[in-house]
Length: 81
Image (tube, rainbow, N blue to C red):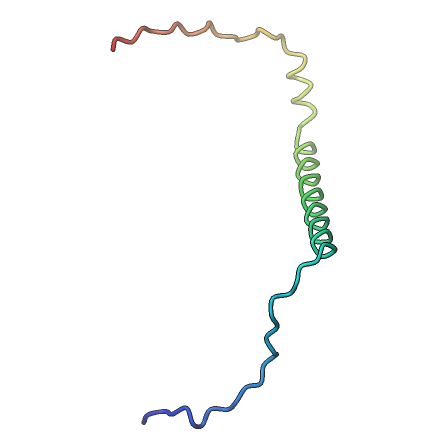
């Protein structure tokens, strides 16, 4: 039971166009659209980051003394090579 290509139907597709020429207007529109999407995404990320800061924790950190619980600096140990 071998199948042959003789009974296949011809499929009419869309004609293949050569590469579309990229004009300056097309390039500028695409660039501006990409920049606008990037600005909206980064602005949304900045807003969400700012909104996630807890004001009560920020106020507590500002009222705490600067040198509370500061450990002494570690002493470097000489390394023999």
